[in-house]
Length: 473
Ligand code: GLN
Image (tube, rainbow, N blue to C red; front, side, top):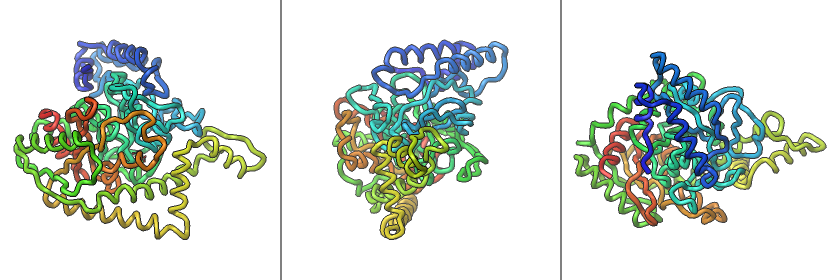
């Protein structure tokens, strides 16, 4: 089913030809119909959404200016702080916690006229690739409910794919926007590190985390990026520049652009995924781009480095959930016993695994061998990319080696689950931009995503290529 795009909704609401309330009620009725089966949300904020939609309609009626996202229903991954509204990270450890402030992205979306419909399910603390690690039960892929939506932002992807919201935000530490976007047939963007504020995003691995949009179209993604990106003085890692102008570049085409094709691509992709990738190259070539062969020898080491760096940072970030400052407290006779009981009961198995891995990698005797080594691989990867980008403007890869897999298929083997991210993780390690664009179907008639990688601050070229792929698919 084709749902109305964010661009279309905003335009019609602003002109008064469609009311924000009507748009919202359509989305709410789809939630009523299918949410029981999909479980995209941890919380649906029906009443506040209705109030916001009504306020927008009043503004339009009075001829007051409304923002670029006027009346667009948007869902937020439940690791983004929303003032006075529970923010759980799909973990029991945050039980009952209500943030005292909004994340910067939330403030910016609200100022642009977005209507928040709810907080979406995720793998606990964004650790996973299937949304099966949620403490509140898995999310299902709306395109085939026997399958996963991907993860960790699976709820945000499912919400858009099911028509519960026109767009959503996710967070991407190693692929958590791009991989679920691919598995649910959506556009998903991981911006350059520092382009979108992380203020109010609950930290998983601070040097890798970025917020980005899920949408049906490239133009919608460009519009959302323009609203959420740009300098934020409350995030010390925020880059100084304003948001890039992306809606303006979508029609520029790709004539003369150089598109990198990795000749030593890691193995393990489904054949249909590789066929779609070949077709994507062909589409760009026909549109006037040149295909350039490149190598990225350290690409496949990215995964290993990530599973040291990300858990190391997580072990430190998650130390704050001690039963004192946030959410759950399990009482015990003394302080240490209280910490242990709270953390044992509050965290799920994957989060515990990561905390232990990270603590080990950072421990005195092993720091050089593990964490230090991982940082060297990170450097090598950055060198490989800058060499590659001397001969091409963007690089195309699959987003995910496979289409959406069955629920339960990978839950008993964390390693196979980790392999889902082989193509997405390197981008986070080097802080570059990347996005997934739906490009045809693979096995079981399920969507395949092609990933467009760009260097740091290469969002413009990336969106030009993504728009061309969308036109040509
Ligand atoms: N799937 C990866 C992980 O489990 C990436 C998660 C993410 O990007 N948040 O860590």
